[in-house]
Image (cartoon, rainbow, N blue to C red):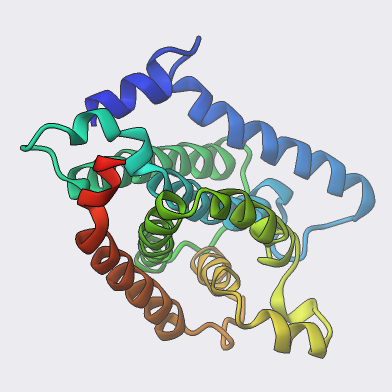
Length: 242
């Protein structure tokens, strides 16, 4: 984890400060842009809070999945030591990125609610469940992609291209109920839409999240994690020899 911290944040000016400034700047741009187009956000009275409830869980999943997917390639020199296994590389990246995003989320939400006076009906267990589910989905997808990207280098570029629309279709800028019926039927299978719905449920007491299925998200996370671990366990020695 110390190596991850030093290589990820320690060599850039500002270090960990960028982990906070990036989401804050993104939320500020979203809020200003959409406030010029609409009189009020789809939920509540605060554009920054509405977008933060979708953007921060999405970024937690996305960052964890992407960082874990490159764990073996990133830590290949350390894996030459017998005491260091591929699980060490996965766990270190997972813990560092999850803790960083939890810190960022706390600071951002605290600032939006207390400093800017955004109204929120907080359900802390639901909020914690949201971020835990996003992290679990990230570790599942990331572990499976760790095998695929290490075995097939072209998969990394293909995955980035295929998942680029997720930022638009995961409910960050709109609510599930505001979509046409055909879009609801198609996008329901996007697990990130469920995670964003859980997040909104945790901040807005009046929000209806009947469409959310935690079981569906957990099933995807569990199956990808188990499959990824099995494939890595069977083939990790061959990766180190290449």
